[in-house]
Amino acid sequence: MAQERNLRLVPDPDPGQGVDLGGIRLRNRLVTSSSLLGYGVANSGVVPYGMSPISKFVPLSRFGAITTRTVTVEPREGHFTTRDVWPLRELPGLLKRYGQALRQVDGGWLNAFGWCNVGIDAYLRDYYPRTREQNTIISVGGFSAEEFVTLVDKINAAVPAGEIAAVEFNVSCHNVNFDFNAIIESVLAEAVPRSRHPVILKLSPDYDYLGHARLAARHGVSALTAINTLKGLRLDPNTGEPLLRNGFGGLSGRAIKPVGLRVVKELRDAGVTLPVIATGGIRSFDDCREYFWAGADAVSLGSASWFASYPGYALSPVHAIRIRNVLRRIENYQPPR
Image (cartoon, rainbow, N blue to C red):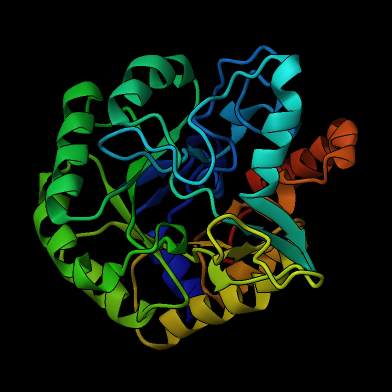
């Protein structure tokens, strides 16, 4: 059934023409997860493509789409910073602050950046024009239907229809300490119809993802991202204090791959037919195939692929070879006929 559904929803007449997920045009079935590459480009000359040093060695224009950091109506410091340019003399302070927002844990990463971003106006003015060669998914977040309407309206005004792949609604982030269950239906009802671009809803495994997926289908959402991070906690064994400034954080990486696969399979078993972009612990082409077999239509590389320990970033060219290999295989991938 999953294979038949894929063929119906995602026709691939010519791999050079990309794929279509319910009106979302991707260059291929491999995208990048929100926040991992910042805004798709940075102001720093050291990391020209985004916030990950690895991205310097991977051609981002070859991905199905690049998903931006979640942007909000107003700039937010969150639990980190809005800056992406730091002089060397301030590097120790940056690393300390970074360690309070992102920590490596067993099998993955725990992060609580808290939607730190420059705001939608600055993104559209200073970053988006420099990423036109990429296929972009703009991730947006807010705390009310009104904020999502404002975000959609600003994107509509600045970006012609068809110029980006989609707008992703992040109504499931644990790192901003807000209960999105209270607003998700009004967000979908009011903001989705206003968008001139296809809308993707990002699902959390800690919320009622089956119910939210059905709401998404009812309100005209084009596709689903499954999954967002899981809410987690780590404590300093010597003091009992949380490792992250926010206390709780979002768990990502290899540890959550079985959860991601479960959610995708449960969506399909429940009869959800919207296209699914699956993410969670993907590092290799075999990981991608597992998600395709579970029922996904596309896959997204997140922290398992783009993050490394600070010493590990010295091996960025090596990490990039692995990512380019996955990209090459996905570009040539055809679903079973």
